Length: 403
Image 1 (cartoon, rainbow, N blue to C red):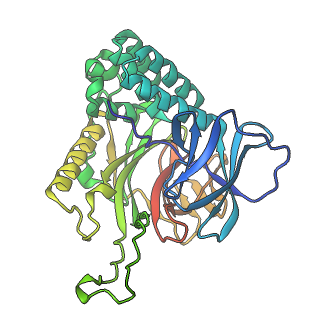
Image 2: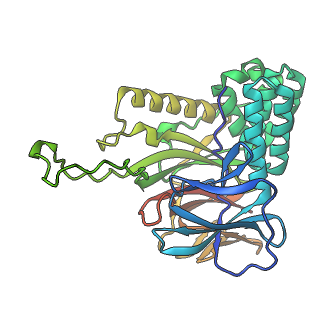
Image 3: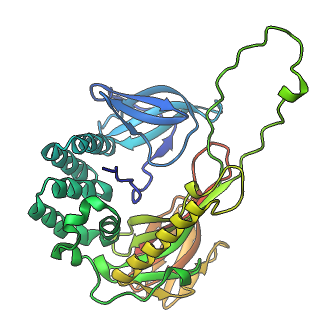
């Protein structure tokens, strides 16, 4: 049994230094801890991540409490080698409760307690419906528990909202094999095969599908990532003050090589939600001692397997290529095309249609490029990757402004 990785979720963390009034204690038994610089929530024997990014520069948790509304966990911490001493991270309580329910469901499923797992996964999906891994974990528990009719109902109700994610999991998770060929599973796919192929999907291109109200996919990436390294264990001091022999002296440690990844971001044109981030090249495919990607035959095989699956998804989900669709907007100038005006400001972008309708989307990052479709403005954003406080890593990500 494998634990689903939450790939389609979006960062929900906000930083603030404003004073809080009438703060409340965390729910019973809940506390915040750190491990290798990352913050976690513990409740009983269960531990889940506080954040859904890779930030790992937390040094000390000063306090953790609920905001006055009782709906938000507020964690005050020292970060960045004490350059931030009262930094606040805010996460919705329901998000954490969903992660705890999902973790409990995974434990129950590992023990073949499928009824208990179904209950926990259902609760997680209700509390955080935008994280599709909870629903596919529910589908897995229903399938393993031989509740095929119930699993088919889950596919019918939830699969149509995010066919990318469900098609991906059905193609790769052997635990879902009993329902893979069910008519409800086949209903996820387009009636006409798509013609887009990964090899032709460049940085300036998008591919679109009419499923689920419209979906766009684009190539995204991260770069400059230097992973945090745990400090070495303390060594015993030598009994003598004499310097060690030359052969025992070591050269200075080589600076770690910045790493990068490559992905496909699938974005809903009707809601703007990131449906899935499909990995093409991951950090696992690099080696610390080399800049080469891939770094081994095993890495080459992993990448080739992912690329083949990407082509399969593009075909079965009916994606067609729109070449050179992206317009570079890093200079900040307004874009006027097809009767539409797109303007940029620090707080986000605004699109005005030919009919005078105005839509605005807040953007956390710098807008690199936009592509205009009939249903939405597709956006490629650059933002910090968030691993270490003073790193220079960044990532591009997909977004959409429904029209």
